[in-house]
Amino acid sequence: MIKVKKDLSKIPDCLKNGGAYNCEDVKTELKKVYNKKCCYCETKLTKNYAIEHFRPKQDYEWLEKSWSNLLLVCNSCNSSKGKRFETENTRLISEIVNIEVHESAEYLNQEEGQLLFHPEYDNPEEYFKFEKSGKILSNNKDDKRADYTIKLVKLNHIDLVESRYEIIENFIKEINNQVDVKNIISNFAKKNMPDYEFSAYRKYIVKNHLSEIIKDNIVIN
Ligand SMILES: [Zn+2]
Image (cartoon, rainbow, N blue to C red; front, side):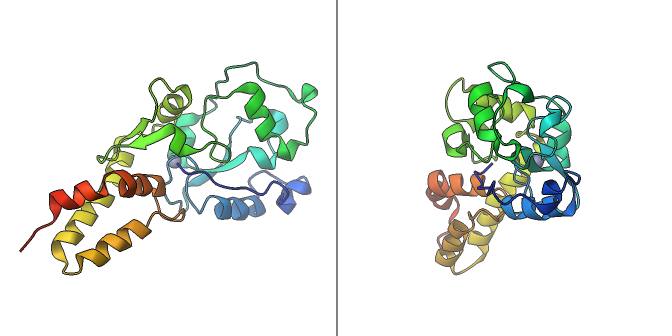
């Protein structure tokens, strides 16, 4: 999971004109914001994705077409989450919220205290850490938001853990097979930009585990 920046003043035309929440304008804009990746698990999205209502449209009908409530999600996270959305405080209804609907997320987050991590407002480094194995963990003991998010969208699903760990496996293979190890290491360290799949994991590994991985795997001839 990474933090992204969405320009709330750049409302896609179809939303302004009363079109559907999943129209082409929304998809195009969200792909730019989310680097064509799932907002929760960071897998690269091809054809299998959906427009996510952070606050479920079943319970927050008034936010169905709110630009600030629309995210980009893979089918797997989307079906794991379903319409679940727990809050620490009472949920707000449109009648008492005196704020422009396309800019409502930050206010709602503060007032409702939702348990789910919000990739446009929360800082992932505060909440999550990774094992080398590809497993994601809460950064602090008993962190409700981190634990809830990991469980809800199944961030430790075996397929995801294995896909993350593959990054390390491939890196180890490369440093064992190639002559220019220095170059491989520096290239690996650069691949934590937001458009790379699992960039949060990559970033964490480079910062916390890379020297140990190199030390354990480098073959000296
Ligand atoms: Zn996902």
